[in-house]
Amino acid sequence: MAPRTLTGYGPSVSPVRRCSRTACSQPAVFTLTYVYADSTAVLGPLATYAEPHCYDLCAEHAERLTAPRGWEVVRLPTDGGSPSTDDLEALANAVREAARPAPSGGTEPVGQGVEVGRRGHLRVLRSAQPHRER
Image (cartoon, rainbow, N blue to C red; front, side):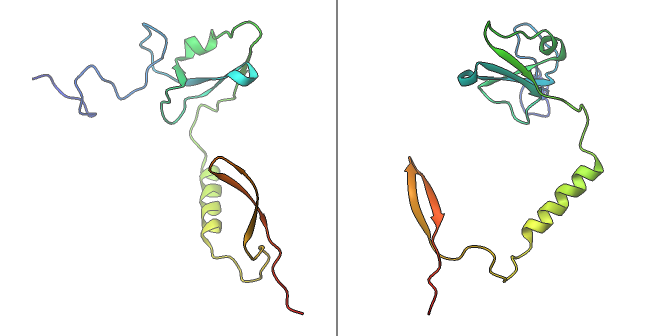
């Protein structure tokens, strides 16, 4: 029996995502997405998850990327590092703030929403004015 990797598959499957270009075995570091409506190719940092409509590219293929005639290539900035402790602390503070119960000051609109539009299963709601007693 062939040795198994940590992924539970045979030895030919690697947990590292590889470049999508044919015959390239380099690790992917960028993700390429096409925005057909805008005739734009967007090249950014490696996406968290592999998506079927995106292409993972190694550094060499990302550098040599060209788009079809009439298309624009947008290269998103990459930091190349992990988030700083300041970023992580700001994120933790934002999560704590969102988890706090809302003050009972009543600054939020109260009442039922009024449907003003619909597209498929989505509805557009406008806050209804609360009824005031005279």
